[in-house]
Length: 132
Image 1: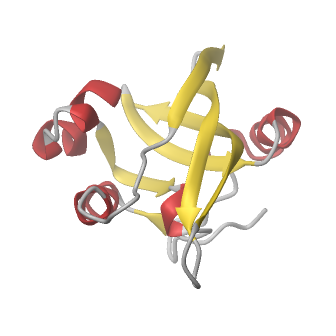
Image 2: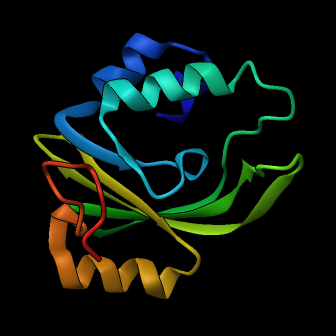
Image 3: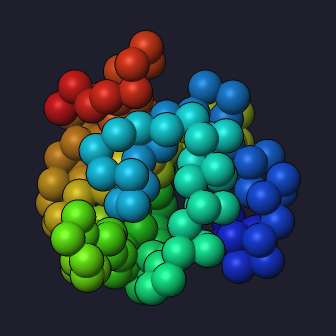
């Protein structure tokens, strides 16, 4: 995923997402996006002054269905500036494609979400919002 993003290969990136994907991105706040919506958001974001993609520091498998990624990410503030901080992402996979992704302030919160909700991560299928 990181390579496709770095190369701005949007078609390849979108091909890594499950057709029923619901994904959170720090830049999108708490809203969950489809793979196509997320790629569109990335395409817009890279042209914004000051945008920096997340910087991953570690990644590890939780089990055969999920991975935990940690790093630093920021989002543009409403009144100028950027809020940046450490984040933990849980990413789950179905049919070898990214199915769900949520970000959290801490690793403990991320792992608790996966333990409590499994591969769906508490993201509602219909409206793209979190039920956690």
